[in-house]
Amino acid sequence: MPTSSMPSNGAYRERVVAVLSAFRPEPALIAHCEALAPQVCRVIVVDDGSGEQAEPVLQQLEAGGVTVLRQAQNSGIAAAMNRGIDAALAVGVEFVVAFDQDSNVPGGFVDALIGEADRAAAAGLRVAMISPEFYSQTRQTGEQLTNGFLVSDAPIQSGLLMPADVLRELGPQREDFFIDLVETEYYLRARVADFVSLCVPGLTLPHGFGHRLYVHFLGKRLTKGDGRPRMVAVSSPFRYFYRARNRVVLNRTYRGAAELRPLLRRDARNDLLLDYAVAIWSARGKFALLSLMLAGWRAGFSGRLGKMPEKLMRRSGRVSWKHPASASDA
Image (cartoon, rainbow, N blue to C red):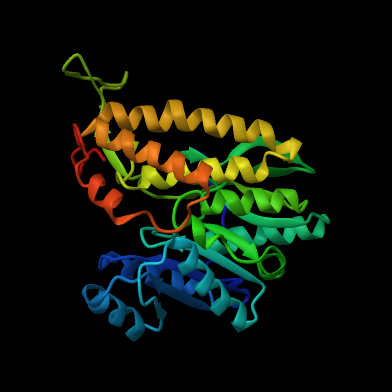
């Protein structure tokens, strides 16, 4: 996999603030913030209502110079990011870069994003966001080139650099989405406003994807040509409610933009064939999982947004995943 040639760590640090959302963070977040701190002028962590159990980690972050903002209750990733972005904009910097609590940011990563933003500005492009080309092993580009730049394709929020003036123009993220597809909605909003989104060629943000499962067929674990096990990734069961609901809302919101319809159709098809079908096939408690998806679709069509009902959250506890991968393979 290609990697970019990144500038020296922290060359542009005074121009950018990092915002991380956290929920029941593990101690690894402390090391992640320590690695990120030399690359930005401030690190802001917004804890999304974790409660007292998170205090040991949050207090260590504060002792290390991180700004910690505590949400009184679990309000969702969009609400957490909005609060963190507002705090970052109040500092008066040019850029905000977003990460999640599991992001272990390599040295020079933020400088590479800002360097590409500067190059795009010099070329006269109206840029909404700059992302790494690779999020883990997933490529975030349709391989289109605009004036020699690599165009991104609905990038993941973690590792996303956004200019402060664009954030002010586009406004806050949709808190009624709560979680899932929040960044996709923001990307589509930027497209409608005639902004372009770009990737830094070769740049990678290492990251794990959800729950890794071994692939079995007729009781036999499948392997690749090199002998390594085949695996798929699934998310926490409750998130399939949000994915189903928010996909309906996205499609209904942006179907009027003709240039976005092929993207919306592709993503809806991929959800059905590559996400929902894999999850149902991999689940114990298939009917419970399917009922969460159906409830999400109904909520989307009826416009019931915000946090999912508690009874559905309890139902998601009936779902577990078959054939979980070992830590060494995952």
